Image 1 (cartoon, rainbow over the protein chains, first blue to last red):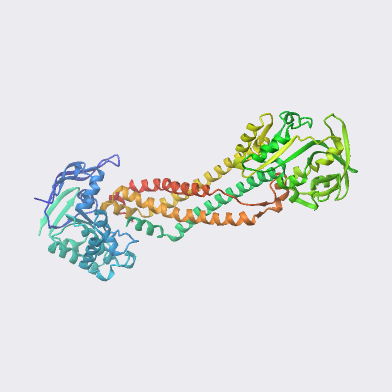
Image 2 (cartoon, chains in turn cyan, brown):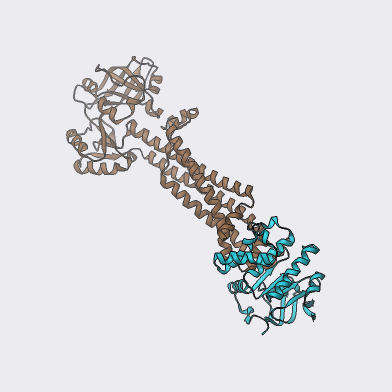
Amino acid sequence: MSLIISQNLYRVYNATAVPVNALNGVNLKIEEGEFTAIVGPSGSGKTTLLNILGGLDSPSGGTLEIAGNDISKLNGNQLIDFRLKNIGFVFQAYNLIPVLSARENVEFIMLLQGWEKKEREDRAVQLLEEVGLKERIHNKPSELSGGQQQRVAVARALASRPRFVLADEPTANLDSNSTNNLLDIMSMLNKEEKMTFIFSTHDQRVIDRARRVITLEDGQIKSDIIK
Amino acid sequence: MITKIAWKNIWRNKLRSSVLIFSISLGIWAGLFLMSMTTGLNTQRISNAIHSGLAHVQIHHPEYIKENNPKYFINDTTKIYKSLKNTKHVVSWSAHSNYTGMAASPTGGFGVQITGINPKREQNTTIISKRITQGSYFKSEKKNQVVIGEKLAKKLKVQLNNKIVLTIQDTANNIISGSFKIVGIFKTASSRFDESSVFVNRKDIEMLTGNNALINEIIVIADDIENVMAITHSLLISNPKIKVRTWDEISPELGYANELMTIGLSVFILIIILAMSFGIINTMLMAVLERKRELGMLLSVGMNKQKVFSMILGETLFISLIGGPSGIIGAWLTIIHFSKKGIDLSSMGKGLDSLGIGSVIYTKLDYSMYFIIAIIVILTAVLASVYPSLRALRMNPAEVVRQN
């Protein structure tokens, strides 16, 4: 069974006098363990699609099933709970909590899920080791480089054992070395832990590493290439 | 961890949080201190009036109050003295023979209230004997001694050991005069009292009028102002024919001042609380708007709205729980200090004297006020955090998470 199934997905914005079709009938299936990049020019609907897949926005039409749940039927609190249990997020600007250490940032999601303290600490340390930040677990975000912060963000996204990770332009603020390092880690987690990654990106280096590239244009899938 | 984040969040901008904490602290300190000053001032005013002769309770013939005529005297003083002796909470009492009359010196004459007293009993009942600035308080047994207020002495242009003529109207409406030697000059907190009060020995009044001095007033001092009603009831039960009045019945303006003070203080506290709440709202709103992206992230990853609300509420409470108690403790220490040492306002002493307060104010505040203010501060913090929290909860996480 597919992890994500969208059928005839629409998203219309009525903020102006002229309605804008950000998504225009998107049909999409994503299987578990995929390493997928969603690409396209600005305004093509990448962000809207990612928001809807992440339960941060609701479709205007069509259906969206994630892990067997029709998320268009969930209310606000159910959506928050659904995101907490099923989706890991990696943001372009890292968005770590500045007053917490790297370990505490990773622990935070598990705390929201109600994990025990010892379990939280152990898993946070283990994940930070996996992303190569064993020595930096007590550092605050301001004491880490951009690449290191994004690796903490990846560890945080994985902490709650989500069904998949949505990464919104995760390499946009990183230099080449940090980008390659981050992609190596995500690729390793994808292969070894079978974690599903879905990126929205403009970055050719990410597109090159993705095993599936979905290209959006004017809110529609223009191409869907599985390498 | 949410508590920990809330605590750490308030120290992100140390200067801003410190300024807010200091403002809360200062506002509360100022509010409590002013309350203590006003309470102290009013308590002193009442106390001065009570111990200068108003007393907690006054006993009269019922008609005396209407006409102020000495012919309405208290009939059975022995029975009343016995009742007073047996009444709980009575500390002391003194019987007065009151006459409205004239005090005259070679330079002029003024209308005064002449009070015939038993000096020994009066000493235990009023503070006049302790306010003697020149001479003494009926120390010798000599006849025709008088103790007058400093202001009256100035008006009459007389000094210690000078003689003045006191003129009274007796119960038969005869005008009687007598020459009295000034043995003591007093100065109380009330200049009005000092210019209109004259004290003589009751025996001398008897000599002047040729009959036993008639008692038309008994003043009673209670152990506590709260027990005044109990004394009044007890006296009325055993002596139904007399008129017993409490200090606030006799001088209602003192009670009105108390009420006025309460209203004034309530308005002042309300202003402080409003200023404090706007300060909190402003600061917390800034803190929320500065952290839009972070709050968007928290909402995105699954932190529910109740937890986001709790976090912002926690931040507000922490700020208030530092500022509030430090203001309260600071105020408590200041109030304790000035309750012993007093605040010297002699530069405006004349104005205070005319109000019957005295130039040194001793701060005073009931402990319940500290508790009430602490509760108000916490409630204000909770209410002030609602708007910033709602602003945070209304954010669209998908939008704010991408904002720079």
